[in-house]
Amino acid sequence: MIKKIALFVAVMGCLMTVVALGAAQEKAMKLPPIEHMQNYTVKLSSNATTGYAWFIKSYDSNLLVLQSHRYVAPKTLRVGAGGYEIWVFAPTHALKAPHVIPVTFVYARSWELKSGTAKNLQTKTVNIVTQ
Image (tube, rainbow, N blue to C red):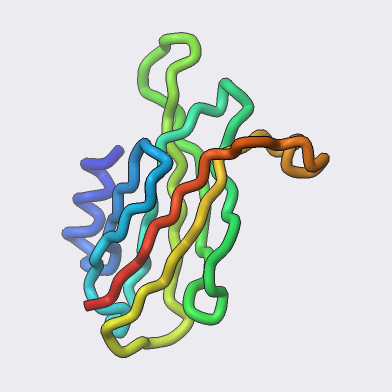
């Protein structure tokens, strides 16, 4: 799937892929200036078989708009194997560099978020940094 995405990016020249995998620590990723009005893709490891999924906790909706979100199942037939979630954001307008746009995600079960019973949640902040 990544190869297909990479091919699409090369052919269309309009999508920059940011891969943010794994740990709960914050990572800053430098991307081309948003003034080019590119979409930005965030890819997070996920395992839907556990009931857990990534949810957006916060981002500046004055600067970014969520275009799409989807879960990609693993290609293996192993029971309990994890896949990943893909989030695509688009800038709302051109920005002058430098600019940092943090997007914070939380990994939780949807029913725990709704009921308020979720504890010790894993969070990840991806910083979209214009240069």
